[in-house]
Amino acid sequence: MPQPDQTRRDNHASAAEFSTGGMLLKLILLPGLVVLAFIIAVLSFAALGVLLGAVLPNTRAAQGLGMMLFFVVLILGGAGPPREVLNSAMQFIGDATPLRHAIIMLQDPWLGFGWNTSEFLVVAGIMVVSSLLSVRFFRWD
Image 1 (cartoon, rainbow, N blue to C red):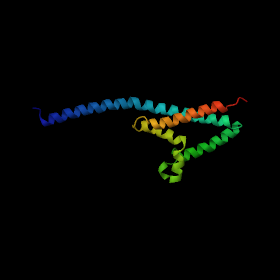
Image 2 (image 1 turned 135 degrees about the vertical axis):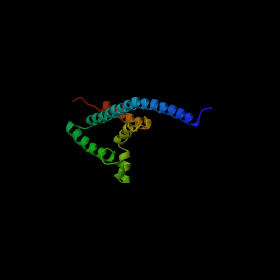
Image 3 (image 1 turned 30 degrees about the vertical axis):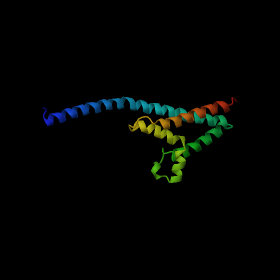
Image 4 (image 1 turned 90 degrees about the vertical axis):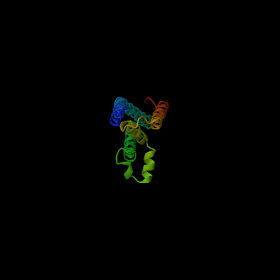
């Protein structure tokens, strides 16, 4: 019959080996998920920018509206001040911004929570809809 101390040491060794293997898997997978989330977010916002350029009459109008939207989305979406300092109305508006969904999609793998499929679908949906509308309304002038 094994000694009680020996059994505890064996259990700790197997737990340590398991957690090390799990850590190695996280160290390999999670940075890749963060990079993938970043690329999807960039493509989504690029599609939104192209959509602005497609529907507005000239580049100056697209730049002006794009900058106004950028600051509103930056402040209310959670990339500027922390979301907790915003009042409930501002949080409600911030939850509707594409940047809020992109931030959550980036934060979850960064913090070790894994891939957030619902936020990915929202950001990818924004990208697809913006791309389709851009193709529809783009004019070669």
